Image 1 (cartoon, helix red, strand yellow):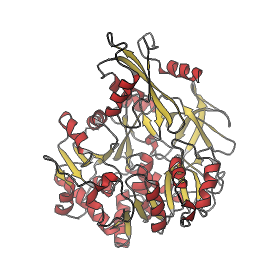
Image 2: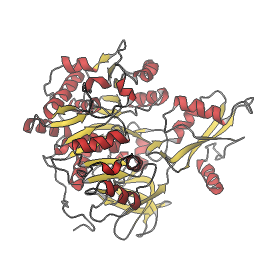
Image 3: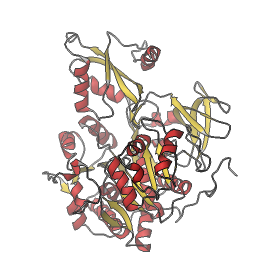
Image 4: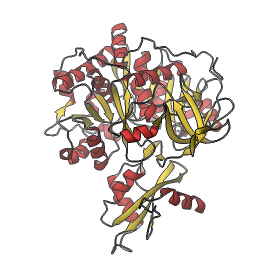
Length: 552
């Protein structure tokens, strides 16, 4: 028996319907219970039959428009049914899904579209102006535009965010998603899928350093981690899940795009977090399972009259420490309003492993830790300066892991792939420790990636944006502690000659805010006459970080 393995959870992972793509699980459920509700979107109910047919229509559109197996289809969408339809529909056609953050500004979107070589983009009408500005600079051949209203009911049952109340828009030289759904047949397409070799998903991540790189994940990676998540959460067909975390993010995708389709449950989908909407959704639809971030729980507990609400249906709340840590105090407070609910840290994971490399045993919770290794996963802690030297229990070092969820490599980055994967081990760049009971504690990062409210910020990317400012000669950014967001970006700027005293920190921050994602732009700016660098001229961010730490 595995040490500290939770009771009631099988110790060996087996797939409930065998080793096949997740979209085949959708097809199976559509045959078994076609009229069962798969998705509830502000009161609009989509059955398994309808969801299967919608994904088939999108797959047929792609195939008949010469999108071939392995071609990348980019999704520039917020949380909405269209995201789930296009994700599984693209994979039915053998295409690779490339999620793009709906918070992207022009430069960010242009970089990822060009790096992945996407020729197809699906976006929301409210986001299309961002894509329109850079469309001619990419290889896009077709852009599909949709709108919130296409899947909203006439009379929503939950509070709508203001942006969802706006009328839909149409744009020239784009394709309408609604017409695709009405004009293309709801028939299965026939594409041979090699589960272990074919890439299903390309998620952009920093790896250990550098600009964002496309982590190539296979159909098997997705199936394995989805099945693992379902088994340790003890999900059944009777489960009603709530999805509010971003679907483009690997963790939100695992829970909100894949898991409910695997076990055949019903999912309530919200486009973004709103405390009142979440509270009403839990009550109205008797939600039993929710994946959240700790600030969400805190926000709900602050609602007026929260103690009078009935959250008795909730049995499990996986919670991630984005922004603030999930403490035992928060957990106990949550259980006062959801008395039947287990709440604990969701997991440790990376994009390169389709996330969920650890999980918390439901009956042996240790607050502050990320739990124990998931199925068939081995974790070890090594000396950061010597990966051959394994550290004893309780000692900190770099986290290395082996897992069936391990990616195929970084798209067009063989050297970065070789650096990350050595002798079968993924070198995560994260610093942690394993205690005597096998629980992993995440302590920090060896790599220079910054985590702002759970989102990855890549220093090189922000620096590349900053030097586009007419006054900036050099830029370096680091992460600094933020009591709400976990970390924020601080930029160190060397101004061009003649701009000293004419450009201030507020100018740089305002300029950045207009051009970068909300979580990414610098919150602090410091001006320097020079930046610390190696003899070869490479900026030493660690020196800046050490200086910053010494001042705190």
